Image (spheres, rainbow, N blue to C red):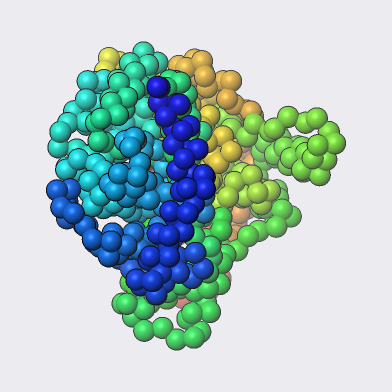
Length: 574
């Protein structure tokens, strides 16, 4: 009888027939009589489960069995997984007990997929299975073996994970698996199937995935693996706002005293920042606790801007008329699609972008505004822009680039990832170039896997970016918008200079502006000319020179006035 038929019979017997229902009712009754706790009706308080010593060779009393069952049930009820997953875990433990008592005859390796980003949840599930499996003699003596798919370079490594010393094998970082060559993936999944087919091998395999799509890309490569795992999927959930608030409040109370006003502000902060947060819950919780315990204050959070406020900021930028129009058209399209819903057959908007332009033409500034726009339209969950360059993505040694790139992607999830000077990923010779190619491939895979939870903007000089686009055929097909940032005119650069000075409270004389114009005309055709960056440099040097020229002066008008003597043109291109 093949594995699929065995699982079907098990489900017919263990997950639904009258005989098991009666046995489960009796088990619940026994626990209730013993402990005074009705598992079916009463919410169970949290009790920490300690690792249970392996007692495979010992005979346990009914009282001991009921006690371990109660503790494990309590732990399951407090896991951040959905109700169906809690029921499944409880039934697995029930099956282990019945197998121990001889009621069930078939040993099943409860290989499963756990879909969550919460490592604490994964550790708790492992502990539950180890405790139950060890207590009821269902899994062999040993320990859990956790490995990252980023670290697996040879297919043969998987056999080591099923060595005699291991009873639970945990596979994580499936993004690393999906980024590998197809030939490797096919051989690896075949080897995994071989190991998990050994029903007498008392080992449980747990595949941890950040989302179901990532897991499916792996298991669907092999029908046998898929059949084994389809019925054993544990789905994680995030705590509700009130649960998160109570959890965070209790942890803060352990380190400092809080009053009612503090508690109200904390609830307001969590209610605002938590729902749209994309971090795994433990990271979100620990980050807040660390900030508050250090500063003794509730952190400030950025208030959401209206679309009018965002476009007012965009329109205040000098020049960039074509870019502004593209963004206005994009917003109009998104708003039309949202309002029309299914009445109009408008394809989903591809929001990945390429920004082309010379240095200092406003690419990073506009990228921040794009992040605000997409957040306002609810196309991203967080108003954040993660800015990186090739050095933040490419590692120095074999096997490190994909994990490094994925760490950046994970940080950017829920927002916008801005890859500046992306063309540098297409350059390099020998081994270094292969690392760059690995970074590009990882980014492309992430753009596909997280297309509903991440927007990527690649930016760089117009000419050099062509090399980047040619580096991997998958880039162009995933780009929805290309924005060209033209060089500023002399008049626009003068306006930028004036705005910088006015923002700082200075008045600029006509003579000073004329000198600035002369300097811009002199340098604007230079190879290293940086547009607004050049003007910024000129502005900073003028402030420094002005401070020297007005040293000892007290007249406020003199102190606030920039003259032609303050305009310093030395080392402007450095």
